[in-house]
Length: 423
Ligand code: ADP
Image 1: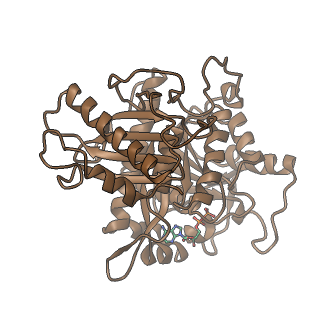
Image 2: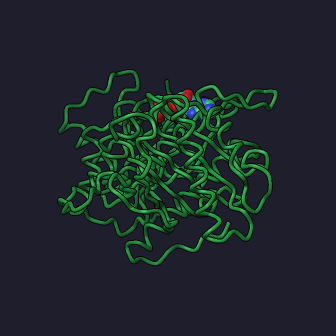
């Protein structure tokens, strides 16, 4: 039997909320619980004025309560992540116990994690637990300990001096809303005053002609270069406008390479702050071509909450890392449904992608709900309408801010000056 959210929540009713009075659940300190098979993750509100000792105490009691619940149920438990968040939901400290995803899982019965704790994590500080064997390696996937990193295709890619940031948007599978996220990221950045290009690198199934509402517009060539379409404040180019729209797009490897290269190099992008690239779904040739020919600032992985989507998204994230591309984070699209009545319906199991991001130790960039309005604006080719206010606008604005934040962090890590963002 596997653990459930309910079991974990019940167990945490027995943990006193240090500094807040009462228990973690009753005092509203428990903000989030996610369980995925044998992995458990909780978020706790950071108590005001908590000392490191208080946090260590809450952490160890929370861990003990979860382990004891697993033992009582006879459920296997491989990993616990305990995060302390502030009122805005930003993670302040993280403690991890057990093996991260894709590590060899601990063998043995429930509670096998006992005595093999560790801590650390994204921007987190050690909370004083013993680092013993079985400690989670909390570094990003693909950066295993002691490995000398092989040269990646990205390592030799030339920078494009006229384009400050190139961001790829990928997904493990089709239909999860990758193009929708790429498009709204582009439009939202442009609305903040940036010069933005959007390249439809999904050469097998280009959807930007519809999503951007390009209609009957025809591509124009000037001095041997394609002039990008300028709509919704964004310069865009798509293979969908260069081929017969009703013909199947069957590309052999070298042709796919050539098609992508042409779109990137033979479009007159001019000076850009951002070039957003909508990649084909999966882990194929085009991503490799891109990594070899363009120096990327990073990649965004789009995923829906379901377990099957997460498995594919893990592969996509690992592909970027193997290519030497920084994963800026994971977005959960179609996270939950907002009906016309304004109510939220958790159809697919909200939080799955956030949990996956935690397990991969990459940032979570936000959740975008499934709404009729977004579907309609996409079909109508009117993304600007997604920024007229409401839940979708908030979701996209938050996503864009987090992407900007991650870009700045990445730039600082590489020793570049961060961009000052005023919004
Ligand atoms: P992908 O690029 O992953 O194949 P698309 O972005 O083309 O997926 O999205 C597939 C369909 O789902 C489109 O019709 C799009 O408008 C719709 N869609 C995507 N995300 C949402 C959402 N959050 N709410 C409503 N419709 C959505």
